[in-house]
Amino acid sequence: MLKGISPLLSPDLLALLCRMGHGDELVLADAHFPGHSLNPTVLRADGLRIPDLLDAILPLFELDTYVAAPLVMMAPVEGDALDPSVEAAYRHVIARHVSEAPPIVRIDRFAFYERARRAFAVVMTGETAKYGNILLVKGVTSLPD
Image 1 (cartoon, rainbow, N blue to C red):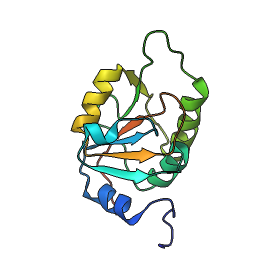
Image 2: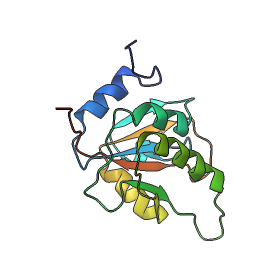
Image 3: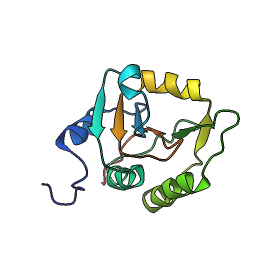
Image 4: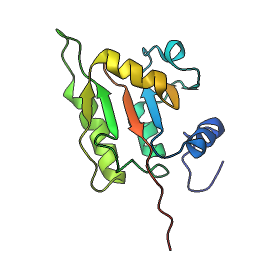
């Protein structure tokens, strides 16, 4: 265990976050997401909810300020309804760590799958909320002077 780093972050996840460069994308996927079918790099975080994982990752992870949408979620399929509390829970955690966090952008299901296919990695969580997947784009980490 490391001081100042959430115990929710496994050694493999910490190493993965460290290997990511600016512009690389990370998908935090709900338990129903076809992560293993889409991306060769999948880490398991079974039992963890996405808000808790966001709370552990964001102190270590700079969001990309050079892209229009560093936070992306899947839009509902026609006929489905979103549970607004899911995005609200994510926004609450994000706001705690990112002072001027941009809005979360919603994209079509298959566009989200394509982004997941090209992502640096997919982290499969225990999140059971419908449309609970979120994609983060890593930015440049500024070091203190």
